[in-house]
Image (cartoon, rainbow, N blue to C red; front, side, top):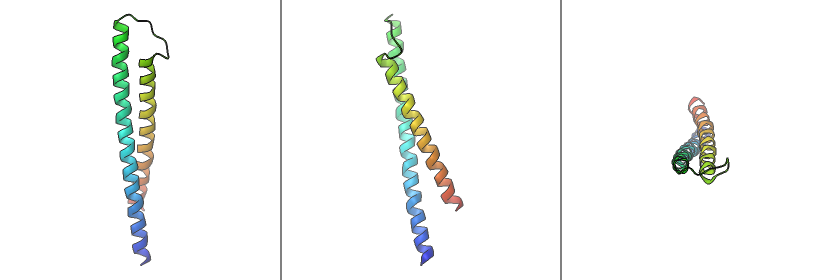
Length: 89
């Protein structure tokens, strides 16, 4: 009986870690999309010879994309490590 409870708790925690891993992957992909869109927008601004600053809107979009990608990567990595612990334990 105790072994059954342990297995059900382990399965529940494993499913949560899988969902968190998926959320991290989605965040990483969304961040990459933002960097791509911001980069394209920035290139267009440079081709139009508009002077820009460090905090121009295209740059801000790229910074946001990098931040979201880094957060998604960290979330995915940490949940992946948890998944490995569940498989070993």
